[in-house]
Image (cartoon, rainbow, N blue to C red; front, side, top):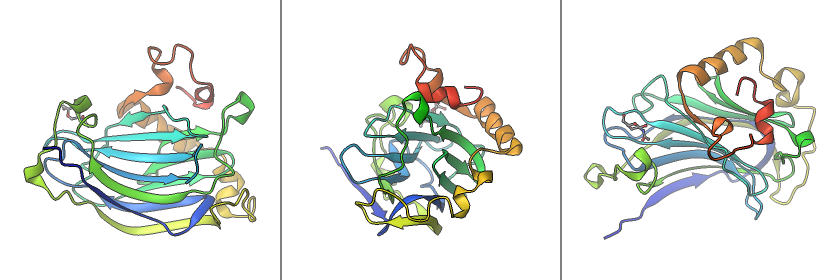
Length: 236
Ligand SMILES: *[C@@H]1O[C@H](CO)[C@@H](O)[C@H](O)[C@H]1NC(C)=O
């Protein structure tokens, strides 16, 4: 028998740019095969998407935080890190900053990834497709844990993720909107949010050196030519 099940929720509003954050406590114990996602996505065909995906593991084995960015329907930009804490023990803050210059993924305010606007290098950047915020939890034991070797232990169900402190500071737009009326005037558009500061770069470097286990930018088997946007990715 193949049991397929999942759950999720989404924001009512759609947003173009802003800062999105949530405190999440991940399912505990034996969560191999279970994926919990927290992401922004547009609802159209050639969609844009900004993803946090938590890949569960056997009790005592480390979960993986995978991030990805889709632009115009194209993804394949996975990065994977181990966390410096057990994400099932307590709430931690996961947030996304999105403006015309960059997308930054944060864990407890530590930047773990940037995706810089590289339009000048021919890379699409999300700017005209409003996104909703989603979270979901589902069975992905065909790929999530040790490449699909570890199967979901249904005896441990239900798998419960807990959420609080949901916060959006964003330019709310209708699903069809092509631009944000307040762009350039909100806090997340301002100069200090257009790049990381020195302290943030230092912390990102720490994440890359100590916690990163996969980065598509350095995967020459998969991408013999480095994807163009990676050139913006300092130290990649
Ligand atoms: C699960 O644990 C194994 C063994 O420690 C590790 O190789 C793997 O990266 C961990 N995480 C996932 C999601 O597979």
